[in-house]
Length: 592
Image 1 (tube, rainbow, N blue to C red):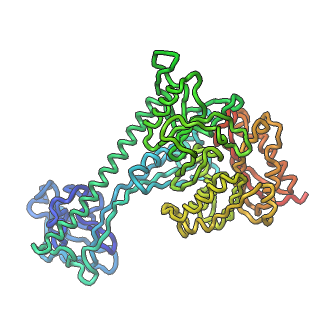
Image 2: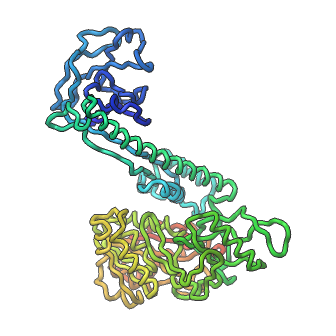
Image 3: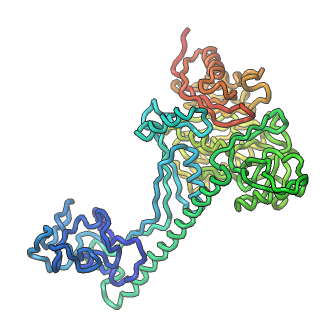
């Protein structure tokens, strides 16, 4: 029970209500402060009560359950509340004990608070895993991030960053001492209850129950409301705890924490930009061997309700491959079908194509189209004709957290639009423009935009409908579309450009996307920022001088000064070939 004016708590209880008539009798709060609730006072629960100790309280004896059961109100700390009659005991003696019944000066409310948990995670990857484990049990799962200081912004790298053990330990200690980024996961249930038990005009008279036999059924009804929520809340906590235990066991047996696949893109089948699920430790019977052996496939991606293998295992019969797919389906009930990629991502849109995917398990589908959730935002993915990597989820979340209120944001190479959807759904950006050439990807983005209106998890002003209105989709080649925008009209540009085959990277012969960069930079305002994606070898990290020089050369050509804010690895595209993101800011105009 709570006093509505300044939220003083009465009869805090963490168990089922077993005595409704006693618990909901507000006229006995002074004489019976627990009401059958928690037998031990919680911290702060009875701060406004002082022991008046009937009997031998001065000697430390209590009448019921080992605690004092008779209290008087102390001095009121807030205005507007009359001080109640009665003396304040000092623990040694009792004087002028009050005989006046307790009459609250303000209304009393019944509040049931559901499960609430806040966890500080060391990395964005760890926070993502915890949120995925909590969502099946709790609808409300959120993430808050901030930095201890600007210079320590990137002291704890992502799990993919290349750092030495000594550097990592040093930076980890620095984060614990107050510097570096913070990743706070908030998990809370939806079983809350707030309802008044008395009115402002008569705060001492119960609306539902007044301690008589006539209204006793109302007390039982109130107890039923609370107890049902208790039971549902406990069940959700048990499911969450069980999911955490299963995940811990899976990490121990399958090495799920992190596993890099080093598959050379030139071998015919490239790699997605990270690891979503692990297959280490799985066993199967090979056609050519009677003994039990580990499967050659170490990981797979999960997109919506589809599992995608990067390649088919060699020297496996059709029956063994089907068994592999069924094993994957059995491990994750949310996966309905299993696919394997049979071609490389060599086209300009980086998609497998109509014949680039084969289904190896699950009910047959004519088209491999699914909807994929990412931090509460849904997109539509055509796996055959578009490129989408779930492993970029932490990077997309990071991008959305950089956007400030009122910014105009341009997303080039938008694909199915998850970057644009995350920004428009999670921030207060004024407008978000998404440019994409692939007509199939554009149609997927348009469908996702329509679904935004019904998305209740959207946190931006105006909800899903407001987000939908602020998102603008432009179909066409970026080099043709970019000149149509007004110069200096955007605060931020996101450019997750696709890899241009063998012409990209440290050994590439291409222009490293300089044509696109030259077309984008004039659109930025002064102090505007660019998130530029490039491809580098592992030995180029952490400075990535080649990418830095490319950006500097284009900025000089456009007469702009720039500063690099951050360079980090965000994925893997082939053996020792990485996808990186360079964040840089336009600082001024170069008059020379």
